[in-house]
Amino acid sequence: MPAPTPAQLGPLAALVGSWEGTKGLDVSFHNDEGAIGDTVYKEKITFNPFGPVDNGSQQLFGLDYRMAAWRNDEPDPFHTEVGYWLWDAAAGQVMRCFMVPRATVAIAGGTTTADAKSFTMTAELGSLTYGVLENKYLAEHASTTKYEATITVTGADSWSYDTTTTLKMAKLDGKEMAHTDRNEMHRVAE
Image (cartoon, rainbow, N blue to C red; front, top):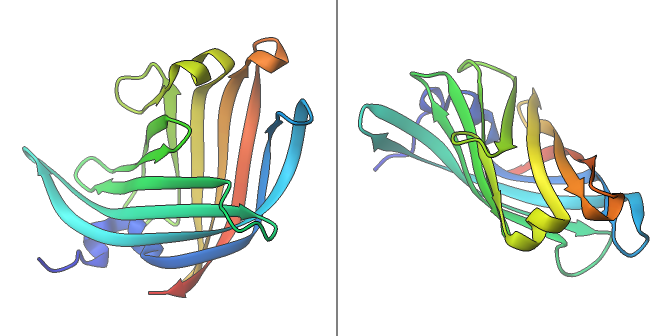
């Protein structure tokens, strides 16, 4: 089957390929210090196009993706993700379905246009459509109540993201905190 055309991938077409970012900033709760702190990181992401996927009358085109992030010069990544980014042209819906090895799964989505250079996807705990699932330990100690990601294409070979994961933290007396991540990605291969 031939690869999808850029038109079939809609706003995801600009993301096809391999990417690296060296300006990552993670603001999160650091268990070792018992406080919120900053972590700088570098990362690699690959997006491979696929489709169509037919769900009855719904037709999706998408990107299979793999991501890994490293602190400083550590040999092993401190964070990885696998999943799919999907485009439903008929409904104008962009989606990101992903899993992290902490046993958290999210399907985030949002409304946009095929030619959008920026779009936002959200997920909420308890939602039956764009939602979050997590293991029992995380539900008790660091529950994800909301996830939001904004993607902005900044050029033919660059894009950036800004994400906020709202967590209800047991170590913060059950208060919510914003765990944020952002980076600028640059194409290293088609």
